Length: 155
Image (tube, rainbow, N blue to C red; front, side, top):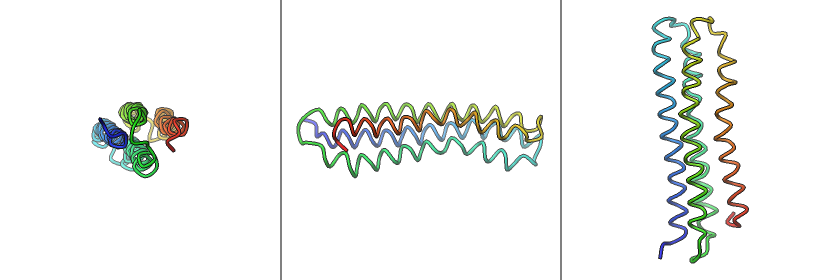
């Protein structure tokens, strides 16, 4: 028999891994565009750093899920039953949302970065606003995960 708390813990580590991997890919996509932009207009460094760093936040969402599961959810799971699989399922949903959100946010940021020289940096605010829409998916995944843990009665 598989220990339910071990399954829950495994799920929470996947949530962190998804956030970290997605953030790394998203930042790399944005930073690649940043290098091209900086070769054209070195004065855009501050704006490039701002936009390229935005996909990093999904790592923190994964960390929050990890901490919640390890500290509150896993210790309260009964020794028998499907609670571990339920928590694992919730964590898998969060994992995919964190990873996809960070990667696609990196793409949005890369587009904004590529337009910085053409707009003399005026596209920064618009780019950040559009990137925040993609970020919202990760925030919703975090909120929905907490709601699901509560509804499952494990938190």
